[in-house]
Length: 293
Ligand SMILES: NC(=O)c1ccc[n+]([C@@H]2O[C@H](COP(=O)([O-])OP(=O)(O)OC[C@H]3O[C@@H](n4cnc5c(N)ncnc54)[C@H](OP(=O)(O)O)[C@@H]3O)[C@@H](O)[C@H]2O)c1
Ligand SMILES: *[C@@H]1O[C@H](CO)[C@@H](O)[C@H](O)[C@H]1NC(C)=O
Ligand SMILES: *[C@@H]1O[C@H](CO)[C@@H](O)[C@H](O)[C@H]1NC(C)=O
Image 1 (cartoon, rainbow, N blue to C red):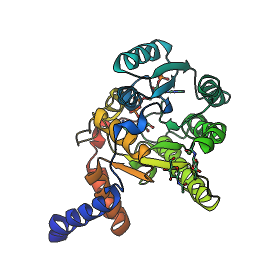
Image 2: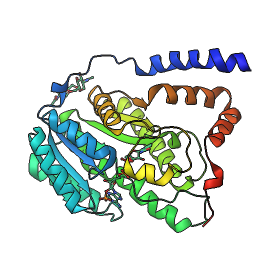
Image 3: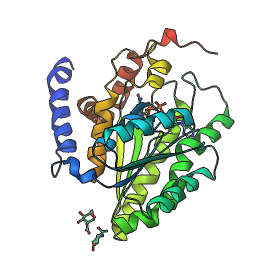
Image 4: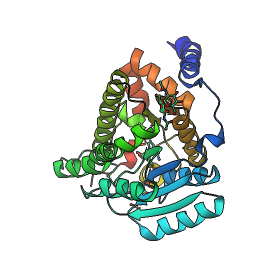
């Protein structure tokens, strides 16, 4: 087992990573110039960083989240960085009418849409599952159903432009980890919905790409506040993560794994030795720091 762990697994991981990440063509920042892009959850974290990258690439931006004051600041910065245009619409994705409001704003402003980046998440606790079914219903609305609703509203415009949908998932949408049962459920739901939809697009020759981004631990303020006292390993940088997401969307890749080596190794272990991987995941948590409420 020692030998397997030391040599074989990293080697296979690298091969797998190479297989997953070797891009079919090179990314060029001009691919985004003048493109009309919606970014949800853009007031902070990875969404905010994606907005700044897209601004530098001279895209048209429509940003959304709940906190108007933060969105105003992000829009201002985007304009300074060179965005072709930047505006926001604030509201909560808990409101079932809001996804359509955002898409209508894009339609009224631009009369079309090239890229839909679905990135927002609502607050969920990091702790043992507390039995609260109501919370799961609510978080499914914000993290999953609003993604479906935005896709439905935006699809006519995306079909017209041969556009792209980019969906932010997580390792928690592929592999179970403790203390995030509600969040993990919403990410698994996204993976199911969008991989099924991708198949139908291919069958029906709908030329709209779907890129699912499977992320590990990223150093956003909210993620660090929630888990840094429990998770042993270091988070990856949000700026680089945001850029990789934009590249994978522009290249119309089916998936992005970031950080790539860690994700590649985990998915490989998940396939060949799932119980062993589960124990590695548990070992990565300082369980004693998780207090039942
Ligand atoms: N950071 C990580 O370690 C990590 C790991 C794996 C996957 N991901 C995924 O990457 C994406 C971004 O993560 P992040 O860490 O950047 O998140 P974040 O910093 O917590 O940002 C979440 C965004 O969603 C908005 N939001 C929260 N509640 C909302 C609601 N009810 N309606 C509409 N918008 C709402 C927030 O703004 P307001 O509060 O102003 O509404 C904020 O802009 C998420 O899909 C996450 O699951 C992150
Ligand atoms: C979309 O792709 C089709 C081929 O699938 C092409 O005929 C059409 O011109 C493209 N439209 C745009 C707006 O790029
Ligand atoms: C789909 O759209 C993309 C982007 O416009 C284009 O590069 C590609 O050739 C199209 N594919 C097909 C099969 O039409």
